[in-house]
Image 1 (spheres, rainbow, N blue to C red):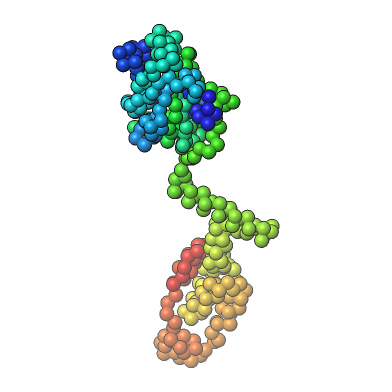
Image 2 (tube, rainbow, N blue to C red; image 1 turned 30 degrees about the vertical axis):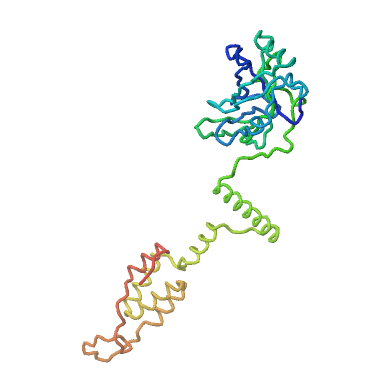
Length: 318
């Protein structure tokens, strides 16, 4: 047997023998999987999968794969219903007559094909490979996408075509083009992005050493804390101070309000209220509505809003 070829065997149907034409129709291949050392092997029989040129131009039928014993010619090799089919016409010589007689009597029951694979599709263990007609092949398996039958031989006992032969009795995968599962564009892009991010993380970590990098949430919390208004007095104290300042003048009340917002202490504001108290004045004001210093009162200030802001530091005062 040729160690550069794979082999499969099938049984000859005696009804296919044509004694007048000294021929027999044989099926030499199918898509039935054969168990190999690398998993199941499938031979596809679709358009473009099988190269029959060698059988058509140099096809000879052998006995027991012995190239020195030619028993006939291989005619009309073809693909029919996903099977390799051919007719073998026996030679009118000693070897041909002996083989023809044994096929008629049933002592030669097997037909074997030797073939080369140009391209396999590797189907991994966790993968399903879908064929053009919707059928699915589960891995692990090798699917022959391009292959060529090289010889057809008669054998006494057909081997179990679903079992095949062991690794030591068949050829290796050396020299055969093997196609693998293509990566989806999105999967490939995500993988490249993840690898790049991981590389950047590693480089940043190495550059910063043990420095802790704050998270987005931690940064946001810090910014919110900075925006909060800090008051030095409680809301009830502020309300009391504003009431005292109001009793003196609207201007004093406005001043105290500014001091509350700017975070002044209670003592500082009490000193301000004390210093703003008017001195005794014997002048007849004649109903004058001006402030003690003679100026117009400042615009009204919403003291209630200020007190509410003290209770809710995130509130904005207008």
